[in-house]
Image 1 (cartoon, rainbow, N blue to C red):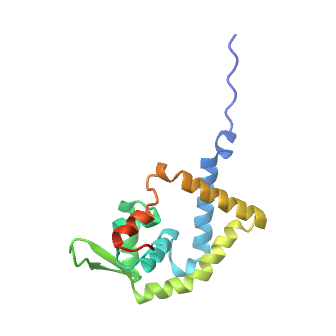
Image 2 (spheres, rainbow, N blue to C red):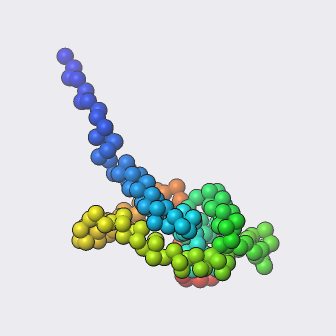
Image 3 (cartoon, helix red, strand yellow):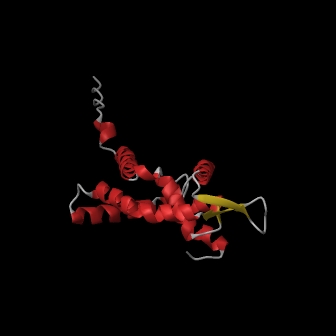
Length: 169
């Protein structure tokens, strides 16, 4: 007589790393949005602004590589930032079809003003943990992200992207 297969419970979902990473991402975005509400900025928009500030004149393809975000979706992120007056697109001197991204004065001011709120959001995400556990979690997450970069749909390619800009960061 064959044995009965084990019952599949919700632990088959709740105890798995993929589920826990997804839940923490949802929590992280919620905390970011809550802390930064007055700035009307998403985490991806924030990352794009930081990258554009650090690499003025970057194009959307290289920006996608620098922040590891899907190029097709990034277009709408850039459009929203442009509509809000935080970035401007200018044609490249070498190729007029390529638009280069620059922070506006308003975008630069926004970044300066939002930083304490972003820092508070990041601290809140880790606040439930003891200090040593926070450090360990961050070290392990960094290691996992680095070691699994190549299996991502959008691998981080910051060095490659910036090499084409003639900048090292």
